Amino acid sequence: MPGYRVFDDLVIADPTTPPPAGFTSASIGDAIEAARIAGKPLQVRPGSYSLSNIDILTTNGAGRGIEVFCLAGVAILALTGGSYGLRIAGQSGMSFRNLTFDGQNIALPAYSAPNVITAAAGLVILDNAKDTTFRNCSFRNTVKAASEPTTGAYKAGLLCVNDSQPTIAECAFNNVDIAIWAFSSEIIADSCKVTGAKNNGIAVWGTVGSGGNLSVIRNNMINFIASDYGTGANGNGVAVYLANDVSVTGNVIMNCAFSAVRINGGSRCVIADNTCWNIREGCLYYEAPASGQNGTGVTIVNNKVDTAGDGVYVTNSGYFGDGTARRAVIQGNQISNLSSNAIPASGGIGPYSTMAIGVTVEQDCVVSGNIVENALGGIKLGVAQGARDLVCDGNLLRQCSVGIAFSANAAAGKMVIANNVISGSGSNAIVSATTIGLAPPLVSYNANLLSQAVGAGSQILIAHNRAS
Image 1: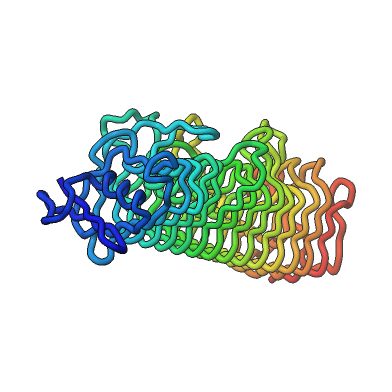
Image 2: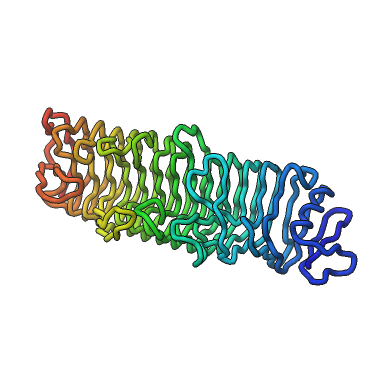
């Protein structure tokens, strides 16, 4: 068994069995406990340590928060069984640096806590843990074991529940079901690298009516995100569900089975300055998937989308048993190389294909200053009767089969289509469409007229556009 020794300024853990002279033979959990009681940081020497059901609580370790770190080399804390590897519950002020947490793909049961609204397990669990920091740590090998049912809990490298408030910085996540999964918790995920997640990269979940979340997901690199079930609940670089005031900025997100960023039923969220490549479905997706799961006030600005099934979606208007997603600003995005991708059936939905449209909006949205190039459709304003108070101004659309399409539904509301430049769409520069996508029949309008009012009540203004 490894051991530890208490020195004047710190405690040192050593993986050697038997431990060096002067060291107390003990587990890594015992070493953490001794360091907390002593009120000193714990230096973990390089090597491998067993990890199983270690609890850091206010009722043990003298209720102290300390730093646990490896100064140089690789210290591996490897799961050997139990319900989790490490859990911090109620204790604040814990810090971990330069450590590797290895789940060894061992089966873990679902963890129970307030507002955990689906089955979720974690290698490392934070439960009402405030002021907790992970820096330059690695989390790996936390995917469902072959013995676990397909309907069982997904496993997170780091599971945050019950109003935990961690900072996760410069950490790496490899071969996980979900890298970071937060339930009703406020996280900062900064400059992390997620590679090879089986279902989602970083997921922030709340509950209906839960108020502000305030999580920040910034400057991360997220790559190779798969999905083993569903048509959008999994397979996303960043997934936000029923969580408000979440900021997703400055990330590089590539190779996702569904979306780079997908927000379901969250309000006042920001999606900005992200670079996205090779996203199979809708790249930046803002929706209200069910009745009562509404979203208001998203800002989607200055993102780059290259190679995707669709660009930006702000969809659902409450007409088909879904909720309402509305009041969005979509501005300054560069979207290119969209294609119709086949999405296989899963969970009773599909199969279907993406529509290769740059921007699709339904209610109370401003679409301004975007560039869409090489797509089947540039901008879609409204879907059937889901079309109200839409402004499409100052966009550049190049080499799109259809430039701008607006809903031809008799119930469509007010729209302004002005000051756009459309190149390479021919007679389909500006059209009306009766279908959800861009299937015929399409009615073409002269995009170069100075001004024209169309629609059942002349409620749609088309003015000052230029097409060639």
